[in-house]
Length: 385
Image (cartoon, rainbow, N blue to C red; front, side, top):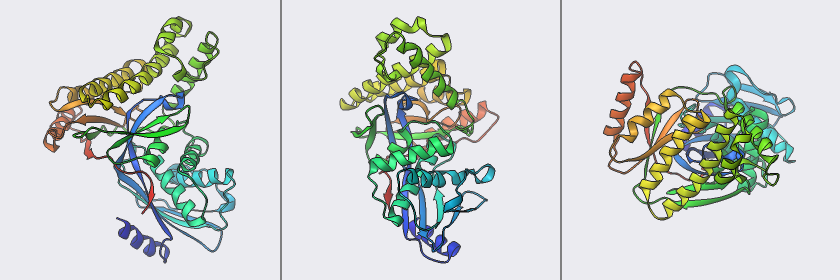
C-alpha cells in the first residue's frame, strides 16, 4: 500500500512525499469507559491502519486530501479553524497541528497531506485516533520535532479533546501508538503508564459491525462523561481521598451507593466493577485461562447494557448470537458504544463460515441488512513506513 500511496501523492501534488506513516486501528478488549475515569484498560492494535503521506511546501499553505472523502481542505498555518460538514475529517490532522503548537513545536512551512485507510469508520475501531497518530508522526518526521511515543500520544489525545471536541480518555491513541503484535496494551490511565500483556496462542478476534453509525461528538458519550464526573463529586463528600472513580473499590461503592441518584449510581457501578474486571482479565491471561477471560468479556457487555446504557439492540443481538456459538470464548461491544461493532474472542476453529452464519442470523432479525464482518489480527503500533 505504501507504493500505491506514494504514487497517488505524486499524481495529486506533483512531487514525492517526504514521509509515509502508518497507525493502526484498535480493539478495546476490556475496560469500557474506564480510561477517562482514571482506570485500567486493555486494548489491541489491529492489522488495519490509517496511512498518511506528507511533504513540506515552500509557502505556509496547507492542502489536505483524503481518499475516503469527497471534499479537500485548503487553509494556511495562520488560519487553522475547525471544519464542519463534509470537511469535518480534516479536524484530525489540523487538531494535531494545533496541539503541537501548544507544545511549542511550530512548523516553519505548510504541507500537503494525503490519507488513506482500511479501518472501518464508525465501527468502534478508532480510525480517528489512528489518523491523529499517523499525522503526529508525519509532522514529527518532516519538521524534525523531538517526539517520544508518550508525547505523540498526549498530542493526539489533546487534539481529539480540544479541537475535535470528543472528551475521550487516552485509550485510543495509546493503543494505536504502543500496540505490539501478539500482545495487548495495558494502560493505567491515572498513572499514565503503558505496558504490554502477552496473548496466549490460539486467540482470534472477529469484528461484527452493526452498521449503526455513531458520532461521538454528538452522541451520549459526553453525557456519560459528565455523569461519571458527577459521581466522583458526590462520592468525594464521603471519601475525600479519591480523585477518580477508579480510586473507589467495589466494597466502598457498595457502602456509599445510597448517596448517589439512581442513574449516577448505575454509571459509577459500571466503571468501578469494570476496572476490577480488567484486573481479573490480566490475572486470567497470565494463566492462559481463556474461558474465564471470555466470561469477563460477556460480563463487561452486560454491564454496558444494563448499567452504563451505552449499548443498543443491534449490539446486544450480536453478543447473544455469538455466546451461543462453539469456539467463541466471549463477546462484547468495542469502543464508545451507542452503535458500532462487537468484538468476539474466539479459538482458531471459529472460521469465516461460522462468522457468516452469525451475520446471516443477525440480518434475518433486522430486515436482511448486511453487517460487515472481518477477522482481525493483532498488529504493531504507529510507525514510519
